[in-house]
Image (cartoon, rainbow, N blue to C red; front, side):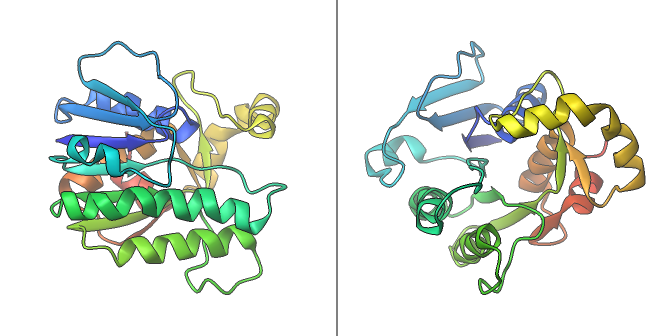
Length: 222
């Protein structure tokens, strides 16, 4: 399986990349991002691209892939809705639309979040924007598209978040994660499990389009 990965430098993207590199069924990972990952692995190809509203120049290089893992995201804290929507919705659809046209047999997996608002009418800004993004993706002609909605995510294998407050909370409360996973398996997962679940969904399919934390844990459980 050949996959395209967006957001490989983020917490979730790092986890997905690590699992792809370990999985013998994944033969190639094309990372599209603004900066180099600094990884020397024969499976990994990189394209550095600055304008995430226009991927037309990359279309010849985006053909022939089986799956796309879209892990690019940003915290909505302190952001205006227009700015958050530009990154969350516009960037995602700018990449997804040509991928659906170029790779009609592709499975597209978007990392959304628990509490996403599919009605697009709720009071929570980020949830409305994520919901609009999910709905737009599900209208594209992919072979399959899955909206992954993880809750709390425990970073594994030395992975760190780009969000400072998340890293601070991990330092203070990270020791609680194993207990939380046992007590609240419907709400807590790990980067390792999440990565494996995305690979499995791309390869074999998932039972639902909206993949919540419990479904993620079921798909990718160790």
